[in-house]
Image (cartoon, rainbow, N blue to C red; front, side):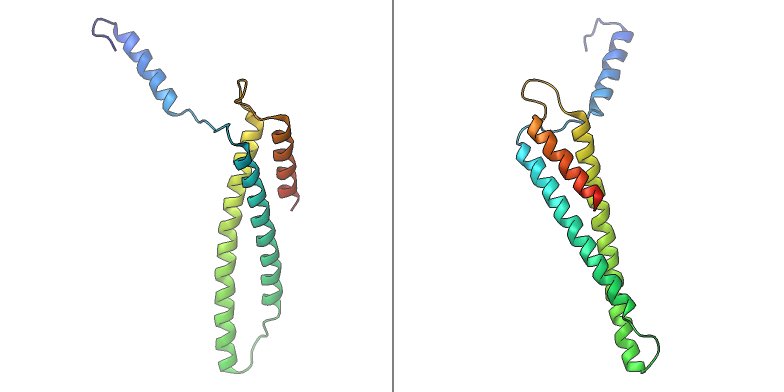
Length: 135
């Protein structure tokens, strides 16, 4: 900012500086990291889905009533299973965020000579997103 410049010039400069602070960028180098992220998200999703099925089966096997000592053990087991459900929901939320970031990155595509996604990388990301959404 220059001392002799008018107030409008200062205001415009500050407005552009504020807009630049909101700018979101994505790294375009090391596409292997994006591929690894998609694969890791898919593995976590598969693990969470299988753990969810096992949890559902375990909850259905819990008998109702009976010996008070047995009931205490069952309550402890149910509490442990509830904690697992909470952890799985948190993991599912994290996976959903990762899928959304991959979708945004895939939709953006990047610009510039080497700044964008290559055709192979774009196809790999699309395939990973489709697999994760199907499951």
